[in-house]
Image 1 (cartoon, rainbow, N blue to C red):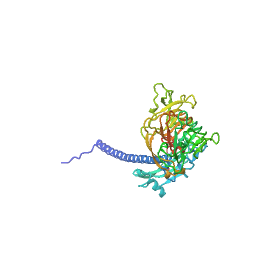
Image 2 (image 1 turned 90 degrees about the horizontal axis):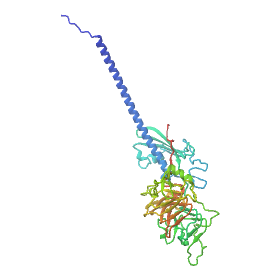
Image 3 (image 1 turned 180 degrees about the horizontal axis):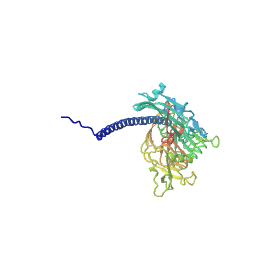
Image 4 (image 1 turned 180 degrees about the vertical axis):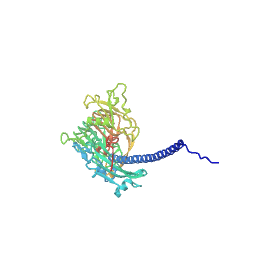
Length: 490
């Protein structure tokens, strides 16, 4: 019997061909998906690498910013470059010359400051595992170069470039920013007043006592006895001891510059009112050669506070208003703004305007009652201040000025001050009246005078040497200029 072989139908052949084509398409799609996944993984890895590189570069730039605020923390070879080398027309230290040009003049190829890890000493400084500045970032990457040179935008201070590599790649990433400078004029004396200091009819002494810096008086100075005028001696102890607790008042850095005469309210037997004053007391300087005081311009400080600090309006009751709008029922007592709960809580620049928010005159000055126990700020009051701090203040660990004024950081003495009520600056366009005794680390200035509400009240101040260089705690020296961040491709 003959066997009949089955024949495949045309439909079965077409189906088989379709299956083969479908399998081929799926294979191609699978391969494409695998390739795309690989690309996505590579892209994600690259994006992560770039993010890490930018973080390391930002850390390098932040360190340069920190050096500007504390030059003594920078490498000793760089400290001088990071300080203010120019001066304004009144002699105040500045990063800019009187034409507004930055002291940084270098280029990207010849920068003012260069740290290059290809040099052994810089590699150790930057990335050494034991002592390098960026040793804590070693798991992320390393800093290859840091450059500081002239800004490309007029009015800014400098450009900071940071070139880094990551731990997962040897590709170099370079990030650039420009820095602007916030310049508040230096205060080159501990206490400065524009008028007379000391009101014999209220208290037979000035009530203002200065350690570690100068006392500047535009008018006359009244003191009880000549012995109350501290003498200057290079061998004077550098301590936190009050003048009132010294058997003989002396200080290493105190000089007194008095526009008029010094009035002695009490004379020792045989002592003349024209007796010899200590050599560091320079009286009768008006009109020639005059007394140099530091002035803070109204508009300059107002704009700085609006941009980088706290700007407050005031009403006739002494209530304060944020933002400058005086709205009845919305004012707050000064204590709401003028208080630091602990040491280190710096409030920065606080500007309290005149009653009409125009330049100070005799008829538009408000009155601020300063009664907090501790304030860490640069407080600018375009009016009068009544200071009656409540509480005993805070202890501070601080450094004295450099010995003999030689600027050597190692010659500064660590001192523990107690009962400090103000750590910073108090600047008044009017008068400062003491309702209670007050102790200050920093500087105080009044365009009028410092008066006492009753006998025995004193303002005793230890001058902060850094303020003579235009450095004020809580107020930025430099800041990142908006819109200047960019990636540099090498």
